[in-house]
Image (cartoon, rainbow over all chains, first blue to last red; front, top):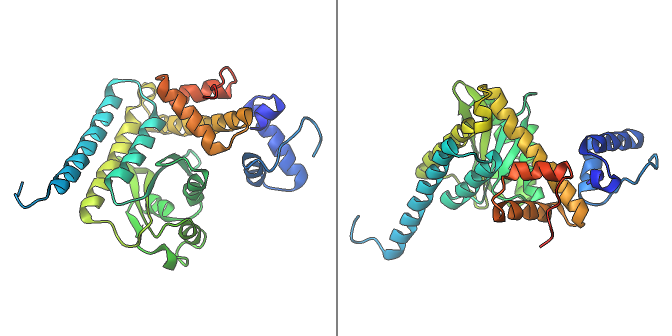
Length: 48
Length: 250
């Protein structure tokens, strides 16, 4: 989902998800669950 | 056939027989045609629900790190997939995988001590009983078949025997995957199924985001398109993930 939102490949999208999780001090799994449930949408380069 | 059997019983048993036969025919097809391993395992999971006194079924395979991954399910409801996925930490599938033996619970409401996370979650989702059968490949165990029931209590011996046969069919089907047959290693064969599953999950995400729909609807779109156009699910998923193809809204 993040790949489409940000116009990236899925390999790039996972890096963005990891970056977001790291910056937010959350697990990648939790962040991914929020994205999939459409509670969270990563936007282009706002460092979250 | 005894004369005192009612017509409806006959119909029921011949329908069951027909389904069993067609399941083994589908297995035979995997030895002849190219087929999609996730479609095949998904079909098997659906057949488990139709043939056995079970309400949902899932198939889990071990990945190269030794973790169980859910690769196919009788329904693609996200909540159900999560219940299978949770068992890479704890649950009957993990126990069946580790022991190589069948693992059962006839009353999940009373098994919280055995599986502190899985049992309450499964119970909250409406499941009362569970059976997990190991998938065996020669001397190795490569995964587990998970049967979830709404009603408490055990499966009949006849159902268990058929469940065992279906678990073996799943393993044989995995081995027959043509693309992998050439690689000749069972590790490669397993890896292909796991990779296919990842592609399908990624494709669900791409479709959900593109069409602003939820993940469950996204899978229906993907599978519906694949079936209508005679495309293999995994190849279609790959095209979607690489963003070379968008599944059109109906």
